[in-house]
Amino acid sequence: SKEQAAKLLLQRGLALKSKTLMEAAAVAAASPFAKVINMIEELLEKLKAEAASEATHKAWCDKELKANKLKRNEKTAEVNKLQAAMEGLEANIAEMGATIEKLAKEQADLTTAMREATELRSKEKAENEATIADAAAGAEAVKQALVILKEFYSSQAPAAALLQRRQVPEMAAYKGMQRENGGVIGMLQVIESDFTRLKSETEVSEHSAAQEYDRFMEESTAAKKQKHEAEFKLSLDKDQA
Image (cartoon, rainbow, N blue to C red):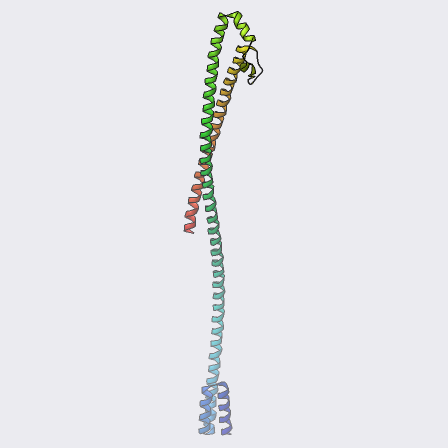
């Protein structure tokens, strides 16, 4: 009956929350049955159109959701890539900072080593020069003494022979750096030879030490310059990172 049709339309309208069905139920309750049938047919066409529209809308929504998901995945991948790059850059900056500190410390250590080497070389050179001067003076003094003694022995041969046999205790006790030749002149010759050898050996030692110092300073200066340039370049790279 008309009442049942109107009631059914109203129930379905309420269940589906469809304004169109509820309007149809109101019309069906007040209109003749034939008119209701026409209205229902029109309603069916409208519902079909709405269903088609909903299907189209759903397809569009599905398409948009899929596209949005793809975009999200792309953005997520891009974010992950940027995050990895940022972490790598931070690690690189930290590594450069550690290297800069290491280079700075090595330069400071080289500066200290060069200063200490210079102080030691100055002290060693002064000691060697003093030893060379003393040895040269000693050798010259002994040489002059030998000349005087030889001249004296030549003028007083008999007395000289006795003097050589009776050595003074201090001269007799000196053994020098090699075996005693005997006699005052022999002893003085040993002393002169010792002074001469000491002077020569000290000069060789001084020359070797000077060369070693110059080589150390040259290598240290070059290494310090290289480390400074490396530190400067790394500092620029770190600031620009």
